[in-house]
Image 1: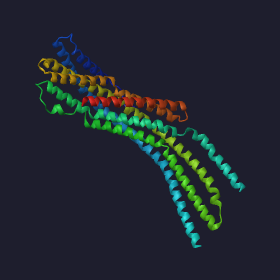
Image 2: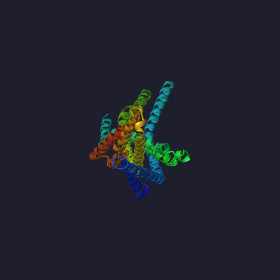
Image 3: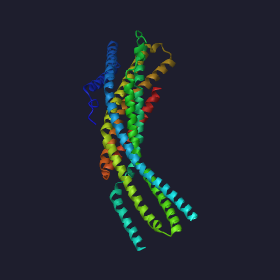
Length: 118
Length: 306
């Protein structure tokens, strides 16, 4: 399978992670008593505004990665089909001996019938 | 009689040599670690599904919370609209289902039951053949089948079991080698998705905690003791949930699943190598432990969020 460009981390991914750190940091700061209520509110408002932007980026990134999932799933589905064939090959051998056994048993019955008739 | 004895002796040698050559790397010992790999995988996939299907619900809850704290905001279509597309979630769930199917088939390949079933079928064939030989002997006096059947079926049984073992090894090698890039790609994407979904969750819980904390601090003087106690309990539960999310990293479990799968690929390429087998069994131990831990943390978080 060709390497999928959508599987590796992109600069946008890094930005999403950095924004997350910033949101947590600003929210935590807004709880610290050394800041005035006004400053606390400001930190928290920024945190919420940044979260809105971060979720918008998450949406774009989520849709971009969907194709990566689809391609990889399709490729794995093909391998699953090949594995099924290999498992079936083994099952057929087991079935073959079962069928052969039934045939021999049937032949035995015929021989017994023929020996009674003769 | 001497000829028959001689044939039996050589027949025994004929199947003994391939058994010694090929039988030493049986797939049978793999059934236990691959079985544990599957159990851990199923747990991880179930937790991952929960994360994925609840992503939109979480964002909706966040928006309702925004509406609640800001009287200027109205509840409209944007409050309830989904952030993450249904197609995207479906593609992810389908990929998880295909990974589950892949691991299930690996278990099927190394399942020792197929060799047992084959042995039993050949033994049944042997007794049917002996029955036929006995009937022919009664009718014609010919003892050929009765004399040769046990040796021939013994040889056939051994060769068939060797063939099945070889087919299993081939199938396992093909399976993990061909599947490796796709499995790795899915797990890599999932690892990142879960990290970000967990971060979304952390932000939601922390912001909700802060909103409720601010409301409490503003209104605390006007609240009676019961109401104060109730709100403090709520704040405490939310902060516990936040800490729990910080201490758990669901993407780490996917990392250990990738390591275990990678060890399995290495082992399948060289089934006779005991070091690779041990490395795989060890990686499965780590993966199983992390999967159980992650499931326990997720369950505890769900209980706290109720």
